[in-house]
Length: 308
Ligand SMILES: [Zn+2]
Image 1 (cartoon, rainbow, N blue to C red):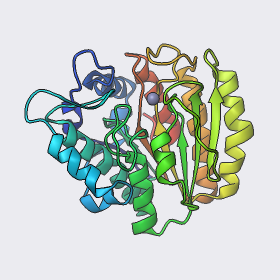
Image 2: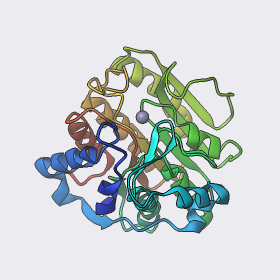
Image 3: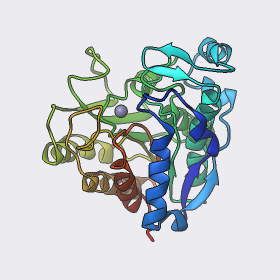
Protein backbone atom coordinates (compact mmCIF):
# COMPACT_ATOMS: atom_id res chain seq x y z
CA UNK A 1 0.00 0.00 0.00
CA UNK A 2 1.07 3.58 -0.57
CA UNK A 3 3.15 5.62 1.85
CA UNK A 4 2.32 9.30 2.24
CA UNK A 5 4.85 12.11 2.56
CA UNK A 6 2.95 15.16 3.78
CA UNK A 7 4.39 18.67 3.77
CA UNK A 8 3.77 22.19 2.54
CA UNK A 9 5.97 25.09 1.31
CA UNK A 10 4.43 27.24 4.09
CA UNK A 11 6.36 25.16 6.64
CA UNK A 12 9.60 26.74 5.37
CA UNK A 13 8.27 30.21 6.11
CA UNK A 14 8.33 29.93 9.91
CA UNK A 15 11.44 32.00 10.65
CA UNK A 16 12.21 32.32 14.37
CA UNK A 17 15.52 34.07 13.67
CA UNK A 18 18.98 33.62 12.18
CA UNK A 19 20.47 32.00 15.25
CA UNK A 20 17.43 29.95 16.26
CA UNK A 21 18.11 26.18 15.97
CA UNK A 22 14.59 25.44 14.72
CA UNK A 23 15.36 26.76 11.23
CA UNK A 24 13.97 26.20 7.73
CA UNK A 25 17.34 24.57 6.91
CA UNK A 26 16.17 21.52 8.89
CA UNK A 27 13.48 20.73 6.34
CA UNK A 28 15.83 21.55 3.46
CA UNK A 29 18.27 18.94 4.83
CA UNK A 30 15.50 16.37 5.21
CA UNK A 31 14.20 16.85 1.67
CA UNK A 32 17.72 16.81 0.20
CA UNK A 33 18.32 13.43 1.82
CA UNK A 34 14.95 12.02 0.74
CA UNK A 35 15.86 13.08 -2.79
CA UNK A 36 19.33 11.56 -2.58
CA UNK A 37 18.08 8.28 -1.11
CA UNK A 38 15.31 7.87 -3.69
CA UNK A 39 12.55 7.98 -1.04
CA UNK A 40 11.16 11.18 -2.50
CA UNK A 41 10.12 9.19 -5.58
CA UNK A 42 8.56 6.22 -3.82
CA UNK A 43 6.58 8.09 -1.14
CA UNK A 44 3.43 9.75 -2.46
CA UNK A 45 3.49 13.52 -1.89
CA UNK A 46 0.53 15.21 -0.22
CA UNK A 47 0.07 18.91 0.44
CA UNK A 48 -0.78 19.58 4.09
CA UNK A 49 -4.16 21.27 4.60
CA UNK A 50 -4.67 23.98 7.21
CA UNK A 51 -5.89 22.71 10.54
CA UNK A 52 -9.43 23.77 11.45
CA UNK A 53 -10.51 25.62 14.57
CA UNK A 54 -12.58 22.59 15.58
CA UNK A 55 -9.55 20.30 15.29
CA UNK A 56 -7.44 22.70 17.38
CA UNK A 57 -10.07 23.12 20.08
CA UNK A 58 -10.06 19.42 20.85
CA UNK A 59 -6.77 19.97 22.71
CA UNK A 60 -6.25 23.76 22.97
CA UNK A 61 -8.13 26.45 24.88
CA UNK A 62 -10.04 28.94 22.69
CA UNK A 63 -8.46 31.89 24.52
CA UNK A 64 -4.98 30.61 23.67
CA UNK A 65 -5.86 30.22 19.99
CA UNK A 66 -7.25 33.77 19.93
CA UNK A 67 -4.13 35.07 21.65
CA UNK A 68 -1.80 33.48 19.06
CA UNK A 69 -3.75 35.15 16.27
CA UNK A 70 -3.65 38.46 18.10
CA UNK A 71 0.13 38.46 18.67
CA UNK A 72 1.07 37.02 15.25
CA UNK A 73 3.43 39.71 13.84
CA UNK A 74 2.85 41.44 10.50
CA UNK A 75 6.58 42.18 10.26
CA UNK A 76 9.62 41.21 12.32
CA UNK A 77 9.25 38.65 15.10
CA UNK A 78 7.33 38.23 18.33
CA UNK A 79 8.63 36.17 21.27
CA UNK A 80 5.69 34.17 22.64
CA UNK A 81 7.79 32.71 25.48
CA UNK A 82 11.52 32.36 26.14
CA UNK A 83 12.25 29.81 23.37
CA UNK A 84 9.31 30.27 21.02
CA UNK A 85 9.41 33.02 18.43
CA UNK A 86 6.81 33.84 15.79
CA UNK A 87 7.48 35.44 12.41
CA UNK A 88 4.73 36.55 10.00
CA UNK A 89 4.61 33.04 8.45
CA UNK A 90 4.66 31.06 11.70
CA UNK A 91 0.97 30.65 12.35
CA UNK A 92 0.32 29.38 8.83
CA UNK A 93 3.28 26.99 9.12
CA UNK A 94 1.90 25.72 12.43
CA UNK A 95 -1.53 25.33 10.86
CA UNK A 96 -0.02 23.20 8.06
CA UNK A 97 2.02 21.14 10.56
CA UNK A 98 -1.10 20.30 12.58
CA UNK A 99 -3.19 19.84 9.43
CA UNK A 100 -0.58 17.41 8.06
CA UNK A 101 -0.89 15.20 11.13
CA UNK A 102 -4.69 15.22 10.79
CA UNK A 103 -4.44 14.33 7.08
CA UNK A 104 -2.03 11.52 7.95
CA UNK A 105 -4.66 10.04 10.27
CA UNK A 106 -7.37 10.38 7.59
CA UNK A 107 -5.15 8.66 5.01
CA UNK A 108 -4.29 5.65 7.13
CA UNK A 109 -7.75 5.29 8.67
CA UNK A 110 -9.39 5.28 5.24
CA UNK A 111 -6.87 2.81 3.85
CA UNK A 112 -5.48 5.23 1.27
CA UNK A 113 -2.03 4.87 2.83
CA UNK A 114 -0.51 2.42 5.26
CA UNK A 115 2.05 4.85 6.65
CA UNK A 116 2.37 8.62 6.66
CA UNK A 117 5.23 10.94 7.53
CA UNK A 118 4.71 14.66 8.13
CA UNK A 119 7.82 16.61 7.11
CA UNK A 120 6.65 19.79 8.77
CA UNK A 121 7.60 22.45 11.29
CA UNK A 122 7.21 23.96 13.82
CA UNK A 123 7.23 20.89 16.10
CA UNK A 124 4.40 20.37 18.58
CA UNK A 125 4.98 18.12 21.58
CA UNK A 126 5.75 20.85 24.15
CA UNK A 127 2.68 22.97 23.33
CA UNK A 128 0.22 22.95 26.21
CA UNK A 129 -3.56 23.44 26.08
CA UNK A 130 -3.13 27.13 26.83
CA UNK A 131 0.57 27.89 26.25
CA UNK A 132 3.24 27.83 23.58
CA UNK A 133 6.46 26.21 24.75
CA UNK A 134 9.82 24.98 23.49
CA UNK A 135 9.51 26.01 19.81
CA UNK A 136 5.95 24.58 19.68
CA UNK A 137 2.68 26.43 18.95
CA UNK A 138 0.14 23.69 18.26
CA UNK A 139 0.28 20.15 19.65
CA UNK A 140 0.46 18.39 16.29
CA UNK A 141 0.51 14.78 17.45
CA UNK A 142 -2.12 15.40 20.12
CA UNK A 143 -4.39 17.08 17.57
CA UNK A 144 -3.97 14.01 15.35
CA UNK A 145 -4.81 11.64 18.21
CA UNK A 146 -7.88 13.67 19.23
CA UNK A 147 -9.03 13.71 15.61
CA UNK A 148 -8.64 9.93 15.33
CA UNK A 149 -10.80 9.42 18.41
CA UNK A 150 -13.45 12.05 17.58
CA UNK A 151 -13.88 11.45 13.84
CA UNK A 152 -12.75 7.87 13.24
CA UNK A 153 -13.94 6.41 16.54
CA UNK A 154 -10.52 5.03 17.42
CA UNK A 155 -10.63 3.65 20.95
CA UNK A 156 -6.94 2.96 21.53
CA UNK A 157 -4.18 5.26 20.23
CA UNK A 158 -0.53 4.65 21.05
CA UNK A 159 1.79 7.65 20.94
CA UNK A 160 5.54 6.96 20.86
CA UNK A 161 7.72 10.01 21.43
CA UNK A 162 11.45 9.44 20.85
CA UNK A 163 12.41 13.12 20.67
CA UNK A 164 15.21 13.74 23.20
CA UNK A 165 12.95 16.12 25.16
CA UNK A 166 9.98 15.04 27.22
CA UNK A 167 6.69 15.42 25.33
CA UNK A 168 5.16 17.27 28.25
CA UNK A 169 2.48 19.03 26.20
CA UNK A 170 1.10 15.84 24.68
CA UNK A 171 1.26 14.21 28.09
CA UNK A 172 -0.70 17.04 29.67
CA UNK A 173 -3.41 17.01 27.02
CA UNK A 174 -4.20 13.34 27.59
CA UNK A 175 -3.75 13.24 31.34
CA UNK A 176 -7.31 12.02 31.79
CA UNK A 177 -7.74 10.15 28.52
CA UNK A 178 -7.82 6.35 28.89
CA UNK A 179 -7.92 5.86 25.10
CA UNK A 180 -4.34 7.13 24.77
CA UNK A 181 -1.19 5.32 25.90
CA UNK A 182 1.99 7.35 25.50
CA UNK A 183 5.59 6.11 25.76
CA UNK A 184 8.26 8.78 25.86
CA UNK A 185 12.06 8.49 25.93
CA UNK A 186 13.98 11.61 26.91
CA UNK A 187 17.22 12.88 28.41
CA UNK A 188 16.79 13.40 32.16
CA UNK A 189 17.32 15.67 33.92
CA UNK A 190 16.97 18.09 31.04
CA UNK A 191 14.48 20.37 29.30
CA UNK A 192 11.71 20.73 30.34
CA UNK A 193 12.92 21.04 33.93
CA UNK A 194 10.93 19.90 36.91
CA UNK A 195 9.28 16.73 38.05
CA UNK A 196 5.98 15.60 36.66
CA UNK A 197 3.50 13.46 38.54
CA UNK A 198 3.40 9.86 37.36
CA UNK A 199 0.13 8.83 35.85
CA UNK A 200 -1.51 5.85 34.21
CA UNK A 201 -1.31 6.05 30.44
CA UNK A 202 2.17 7.54 30.35
CA UNK A 203 5.39 5.53 30.24
CA UNK A 204 8.51 7.64 30.87
CA UNK A 205 11.87 6.27 29.70
CA UNK A 206 14.68 8.32 31.22
CA UNK A 207 18.05 8.50 29.48
CA UNK A 208 21.11 9.93 31.20
CA UNK A 209 23.56 12.30 29.54
CA UNK A 210 25.94 10.23 27.38
CA UNK A 211 23.62 7.23 27.03
CA UNK A 212 23.48 5.71 23.56
CA UNK A 213 22.06 2.89 21.55
CA UNK A 214 22.25 0.16 24.19
CA UNK A 215 20.34 2.00 26.91
CA UNK A 216 17.82 3.48 24.48
CA UNK A 217 17.00 0.09 22.96
CA UNK A 218 16.92 -1.69 26.30
CA UNK A 219 14.49 0.86 27.79
CA UNK A 220 12.10 0.63 24.86
CA UNK A 221 12.40 -3.16 24.58
CA UNK A 222 12.03 -4.00 28.26
CA UNK A 223 9.70 -1.25 29.49
CA UNK A 224 7.66 0.44 26.76
CA UNK A 225 7.21 -1.91 23.81
CA UNK A 226 5.57 -4.76 25.78
CA UNK A 227 3.07 -2.29 27.29
CA UNK A 228 2.31 -0.68 23.96
CA UNK A 229 1.78 -4.09 22.39
CA UNK A 230 -0.49 -5.26 25.22
CA UNK A 231 -2.58 -2.09 24.79
CA UNK A 232 -3.47 -3.34 21.27
CA UNK A 233 -3.53 0.10 19.63
CA UNK A 234 -5.72 0.59 16.57
CA UNK A 235 -3.44 3.42 15.48
CA UNK A 236 0.19 4.24 16.26
CA UNK A 237 1.38 7.86 16.20
CA UNK A 238 5.03 8.87 16.46
CA UNK A 239 6.49 12.12 17.74
CA UNK A 240 9.65 11.72 15.68
CA UNK A 241 12.39 13.93 17.06
CA UNK A 242 15.94 13.36 15.86
CA UNK A 243 17.70 15.37 18.57
CA UNK A 244 18.92 12.27 20.43
CA UNK A 245 21.44 11.84 17.61
CA UNK A 246 25.12 11.89 18.57
CA UNK A 247 25.77 15.16 16.71
CA UNK A 248 22.80 17.16 17.97
CA UNK A 249 23.80 20.56 19.39
CA UNK A 250 20.90 20.70 21.88
CA UNK A 251 21.29 17.40 23.73
CA UNK A 252 23.78 14.77 24.89
CA UNK A 253 22.45 11.37 23.83
CA UNK A 254 24.45 9.30 21.38
CA UNK A 255 22.03 7.62 19.01
CA UNK A 256 22.87 6.67 15.43
CA UNK A 257 20.58 6.63 12.38
CA UNK A 258 20.30 2.83 12.77
CA UNK A 259 18.60 3.29 16.15
CA UNK A 260 15.78 5.22 14.51
CA UNK A 261 15.37 2.46 12.00
CA UNK A 262 15.21 -0.05 14.84
CA UNK A 263 12.63 1.75 17.01
CA UNK A 264 10.48 2.54 13.98
CA UNK A 265 10.50 -1.09 12.90
CA UNK A 266 9.41 -2.14 16.40
CA UNK A 267 6.57 0.40 16.43
CA UNK A 268 5.41 -0.62 12.97
CA UNK A 269 5.34 -4.22 14.13
CA UNK A 270 2.94 -3.21 16.92
CA UNK A 271 0.78 -1.27 14.43
CA UNK A 272 0.60 -4.36 12.25
CA UNK A 273 -0.28 -6.66 15.14
CA UNK A 274 -3.39 -4.76 16.25
CA UNK A 275 -3.90 -1.69 14.06
CA UNK A 276 -3.85 -3.00 10.47
CA UNK A 277 -0.43 -1.36 10.14
CA UNK A 278 -1.81 2.15 10.56
CA UNK A 279 1.07 4.43 11.56
CA UNK A 280 1.56 8.19 11.31
CA UNK A 281 4.80 9.96 12.20
CA UNK A 282 5.31 13.67 12.58
CA UNK A 283 8.62 15.52 12.76
CA UNK A 284 9.46 17.03 16.14
CA UNK A 285 13.01 18.15 16.95
CA UNK A 286 16.43 17.36 15.49
CA UNK A 287 18.95 20.15 15.04
CA UNK A 288 22.19 18.51 13.93
CA UNK A 289 22.62 19.37 10.28
CA UNK A 290 23.16 17.44 8.10
CA UNK A 291 22.93 14.40 10.45
CA UNK A 292 19.15 14.46 10.75
CA UNK A 293 18.77 13.73 7.00
CA UNK A 294 20.03 10.13 7.08
CA UNK A 295 18.21 9.52 10.38
CA UNK A 296 14.89 10.62 8.86
CA UNK A 297 15.59 8.43 5.82
CA UNK A 298 16.30 5.45 8.10
CA UNK A 299 13.04 6.20 9.92
CA UNK A 300 11.07 6.20 6.66
CA UNK A 301 12.67 2.96 5.45
CA UNK A 302 11.20 1.23 8.50
CA UNK A 303 7.94 3.22 8.72
CA UNK A 304 6.53 2.05 5.41
CA UNK A 305 7.14 -0.63 2.83
CA UNK A 306 7.91 1.97 0.16
CA UNK A 307 11.68 1.96 -0.09
CA UNK A 308 13.38 3.02 -3.31
ZN1 LIG B 1 13.37 17.89 21.12
